[in-house]
Length: 429
Ligand SMILES: O=C(O)CCC(=O)C(=O)O
Image 1 (spheres, rainbow, N blue to C red):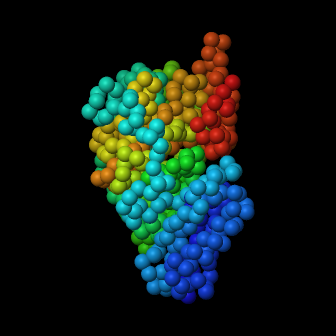
Image 2 (image 1 turned 180 degrees about the vertical axis):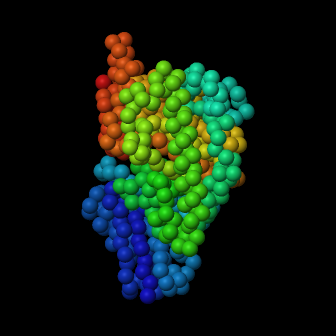
Image 3 (image 1 turned 30 degrees about the vertical axis):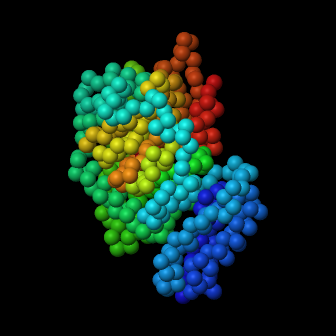
């Protein structure tokens, strides 16, 4: 006997429809099951939250693989024109990208946010503006780091010591995960209140148009999820993911050291929470794998919408495939040139706070293309959730009053979830 899991998709509100449908549905045609389930679920959603548009994913999970012939995943919208009435965050599940040959309307982005409509948009060949590339192994790079953080809020690092072989292994394992069938990836779907697991970008909640991407988040070992994806064969995935995170942690320490050094500070200056205490690491880092499948209409789509990161810093690996862009006043959206073995460092909101506004949290986004499946990873360096984050004392004096009130890591994370791009402004003094 089989069981169907039904999950609501777009605009389900802050609670997710996650019903187990027992027989007698099993054995009925996929369309019949979906239409009955849709009616039930949409009634519930409408009554609870007023969300109007709903996608239903019907996934055959166990046994009896013949009960849903060729229709493991069904997606359809109900009443797509109804306006939303509440401001609850939504966490739509990613599309089954492999089975879509034209860009669905819900994935078409308004022209004002797309690169072709931005007069300042410059291509990789247009060298008017390009992100600084810094040799982080060179002891004399403090000024370059400071200038990059002040002017761009981002830079690329080379000579960082992360072995190229680990780049390749991480890429292989990332591709392995995203190549799994959708229904399998949904076995580890991220819960709305969580950051770990498979799903669409968390910032999706703040945009009406949908993003052409999927992601998988982890904090430390991904073994719990990996075991569900590959019951017999998850050890290598876990080993590589843990190794990459360890390398990123070491590199982040080095980079933060350079950033603080460039302001005349050290890790010890007001940053007790940053260093391991009594041997235990106080930071709570998030590691994210991103996947941007080949897109049938990339000029009208968006991989990852404009955002700044909550973190102190983020280290992005775009696996030698362009798509990442950073925004710079006066230059507009600037593509980050893919360089084999280089890593991109983004200044996050928390670094803007501790540097008392000297370093700026960079606005960035990721575009998609029609020829290759782009992968990327992002390692977000976060303090512990109860650490107090505030402008560093040595950067504050009568001529430079504190720009932000103190917040704990947890409080700022929650502000970001609620206010998104207005979070920094909300704590400004
Ligand atoms: O995928 C990329 O290139 C960018 C990743 C990113 O900005 C993020 O995950 O926040």
